[in-house]
Amino acid sequence: MTSSPTTRTSGAGNLREQVYVALRQRLMSGEFSFRDRLGEERVAGLLGVSRTPVREALTRLAGDGLVEKRPDGGYYPAEPDLAGLRDLYEIRVTLELRGLQRALESDGTHDPALLEPLRDEWLALRRDPPPPDPAFVALDENFHITLSRAAGNSELANMLAAVNARIRAVRMYDFLTADRITLTISQHLDIVEKVLGGEVEAGVLALRGHVGESMEIVEKRAARAITQMVLNRGRAPRSPA
Image 1 (cartoon, helix red, strand yellow):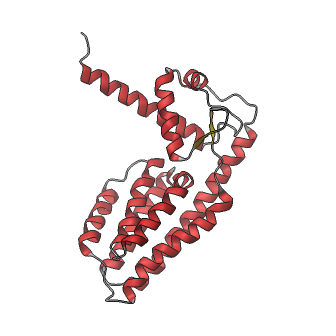
Image 2 (cartoon, helix red, strand yellow):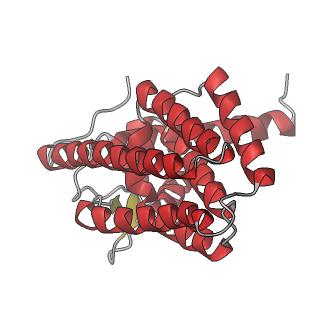
Image 3 (cartoon, helix red, strand yellow):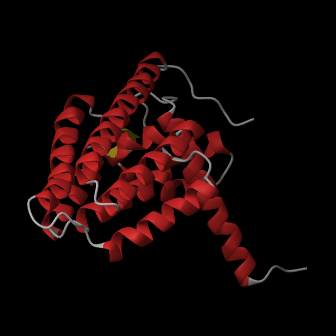
């Protein structure tokens, strides 16, 4: 039986996503070295697919900050910027804590119209946690930006979003294991419930601890990936089983 256009489109979409996820996993595990040119034909051979989904995956991964296009026109693994990570995390913490602390200087409240749906969203995630996935970073960023917007200063939230975009590629390393997903959900709920309950000072302490812990995990995992990239220099990546 001939497949319908809808079926063909769905199949193509699934393949594109599978190729993107597979290549992202290889990059984040450090399977390629920084010198490895990720040619479409070569990567397609490794993954056993055509060049088209590989081309689309490389474009998406460049947007994620996991690969970079160099002057020769080719894509290469991007080296995590651990040197600048702490500086950007410091800016991130400053912006987030300022969002919470400014409420203490006014009426001590945040917008419940933003925080209550946010709490409900993360309660649902606690009931049914998603599997480990670097893409979880999008949910994490949304939590922190919404928390910032609830403080009433949209420019602080916009600045936080800009910083998040710069550290996103490295922060993806925080969500590779189930324990980190579970703990992030628990810590987010603790923060938002404290703020909703008017315990802003306690929320500030919880937020500071949460971001600091995340930074330590990210640094360790990204450093491990960099080490693997160096060790894999000159070694051919494995073909899929």
